[in-house]
Length: 640
Image 1 (tube, helix red, strand yellow):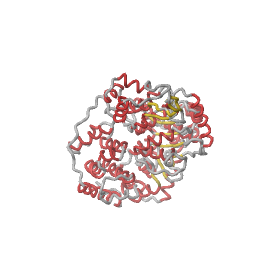
Image 2 (cartoon, rainbow, N blue to C red; image 1 turned 45 degrees about the horizontal axis):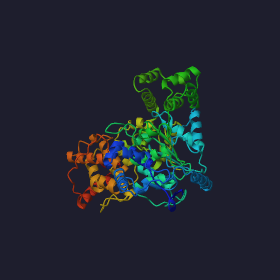
Image 3 (spheres, rainbow, N blue to C red; image 1 turned 90 degrees about the vertical axis):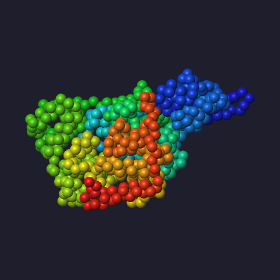
Image 4 (cartoon, rainbow, N blue to C red; image 1 turned 135 degrees about the vertical axis):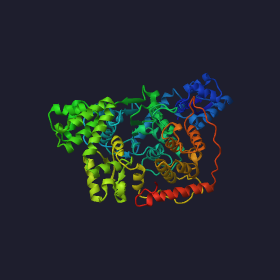
């Protein structure tokens, strides 16, 4: 620990004001320096001295003996949600210019790294593997060198592009090159396509990178922590130095699309935003690889050093021809070149078209009918890549046997994937739930899944389990072919109701499993168009945002549920079927769950609602009856 000599006193640890944390917290809340200065009652020049670090003396550090400084520290903590222990740092960082201490710390860090335990990669989700992979050598070489660099530069790499451009395939190929052998740093792979809950990701990351009460090493048990404590533990663990790697796929599912006071690409969850900003600015040896369709608006301040953006280009004609041949297509360069022109080099379009021609046209590119070619050409008048791929998928849907088509459509209802047992339940439900799969057994289902996997339309979603999923673009297209409400299919494929929903709670639930269960039912109710009952579960059984956000500290979940009611980021989208008082209450809570922004006024609080135990039990009984009907009726669709 660095020590600073003081006149007339023995050496003691120096204290430094953490100005970088102050800047990050302000940026997280999207506030200007003028706004923060006004909120704490100082002029902007004084505030800028704190944010720039000018208040830190190079020799003596930061003194908090002054009453005015103490008041400023207290007000900054209250306004920005920062603890005094976070703003005042004791240690080597507090003494800029202490070169000998820095050198000793570097040597100690190298020695600790040599003795550090080995980490095995953790694949919380399996990224979809391209059945045939071509090209992208330059990008993979860059990622491989970056993964081994110490320190990494940049800290965050974002693979950005339209859906189907090959972002996930590149990330999966990169991970395949790293292998699963023990490494000096951890590797955590998370797909927001499979689980968009940011609090679940933070909980998994904290459990992996910060095991045990003090982050004692990989594999140690770790007691559960409150949602508000996840980030602090995770940042502490990542900042200890090992070259940890985060791979986050499908980040656009937790980013804003713009409008309603949010920037395009802004992360919904403040904790996830703060984590990525911390990694971008430098957090030990940590680095992150992200895939998204949107720009990382929250990391724009680090675009010159901490963040690098890679945009995979469309496949060149040579790579596209190689990919088509791997799918079994034969023909001269002219025939393959014609197919390439019809796809525009869009990676997923080339793969799907190759799979279609190889499976249903005998690999003969010349058999692609003129009508099909003309339909692909028409796509150029609109969104080129999306429309072309949609045209290919439509042809695929017509060519697939009815049972396999309906199997793929029903699998598309489960974004996190579905196991064979869940799919068998859909078959047993019969009627329109089973569709053309009616009468299938386990053998027919296994053959259908195996064929779809060979065609590259589905993939094994979880390692070691017979669970299948599909690409989001394919999922979106085939889900539109269901012919039955998706929530009915989802309910029929669920094995059992969530635990303990048949009893009235004496208090709003605190256990993660119980809150998860209520959120699942609330989402089902909204999907079924029963917004009134969904609100009863939210306000009475779950205790509303006052319980979720303010008591449990689970701000991300509270904000996500409110967005589900609004159907997006705009709170004006609250269901019209709800009474105006209820809509006003939800809008008020939505405004309270997001960072304060200039130009967004606070709405007056709605009238106080009575939330006595009797209404709560009444709401829970209604929920219980609905749940039992959904999960226990033979058709799996008790609600109409």
